Length: 301
Image (cartoon, rainbow, N blue to C red; front, side, top):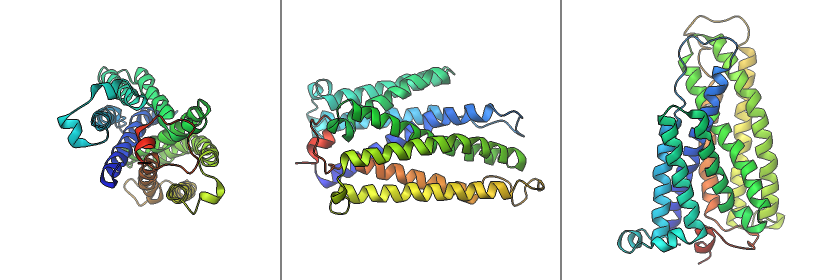
C-alpha cells in the first residue's frame, strides 16, 4: 500500500473508531445521566448515537470500497472485485461492520437504543478479529482487543456526552458536579481495564527492544503519552470538582459547566483514537502467525 493510500485508510479507521465511541458511549452516557437520583435543570441532550451510527455506516462503506479495488480507489471504481470483498477475511469484516452500523442506525431510528447496543458490540467483535493481536495469538488476541477497545470507546464516548450534558445543565452547577461525579466513577473502571489490556497488547506485539527502533513502537509510545495526558486532565477535572463542591455559585457564574480540563480531555481522547487508527495500518514488530486484515498484507509490500 502506498503512503497516500495508507493515510486514507488510517483516516477512515479513525472515523470508524470515533463513530463507535460516539454511538456506544453516547448511549451509555445518557443512561448514566438519566440514572441520577435527582433530575437536572433541563432536558438531557440526545445521545447522538444515530448520527454516529450513520457515520460508521458511511466509513464502513468507504473501507469496503477500498477492499473492492484491492486498496486502490481507482481500481475500486473501474474494476471492483465483489469476490475479493465476500471471500476474504478482511472483506467479510468490512461487510459485517457495515451491516452492524446499518442495523444499529435502524434500531436507533425506531427509538430502541438498548437493542442497538447488540449490533454495535458486533462491530467491536469484528474489530477484535481484524486487529493485530489476533494474528499473533489467535482467539486470545481477539478477546484482548475486545477488552481493550470497548472500555476505550465507552470512555471517550461517555466523556463527550457528559460534557454536552454539563453544558446543557450549566445553569445548575450542583447538577453538573453530580453528573461529572457519576461519570468519574464509571470512567475509573473503564480506564483501569483499558490500561491493563493495553499493556498486555503492547507486550504481545512489541518486544521491549523494538519500542524505540520501529515505527510501530514509537507510535505506541505516543499513544501511551496521550493516555497519560488524558488521565492527568481527568485528575485535574476531578480536583476542580472537589473544589467546586463548596457553596453553590450563582447560575452562570465561573463554576458553571464542565471544567476546562474536562473539555481538553475530550480533545486528547480524540487524538488518541487517531493514533490508534494509525497503529492499525502499521505492521507490528512481532510477526503475525497468520494475516487476516488487508492492512497486514499491504503494509508489508
